[in-house]
Image (cartoon, rainbow, N blue to C red; front, side, top):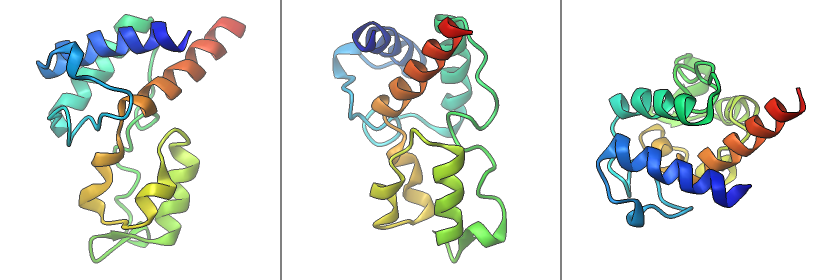
Length: 130
């Protein structure tokens, strides 16, 4: 199942970001490696919903406004409370790796193809068992 999801995700990301599917690897960062910008995430979500015939609630795959509260970010860095919030709201995000240098501006580097696939595997499995 993971390979099939990966192929669909590659096709989806290639279309949304204008990159060649062969450039997309499991560990590719959507921002750092594939050039995604904030506006692209809306298109990516729309295309994933269509490709997988699911609805992705706001903030469930990408953080959206999770860290807009002062207690979660201080001087441009995500606080321990903010890291815990990310762990709870975004279980597919590698928060432990991000926590080594939790600068908010670096968070998007951790939105990887692998994270998207883990999310979709979970969602597709839940949909199939519903």
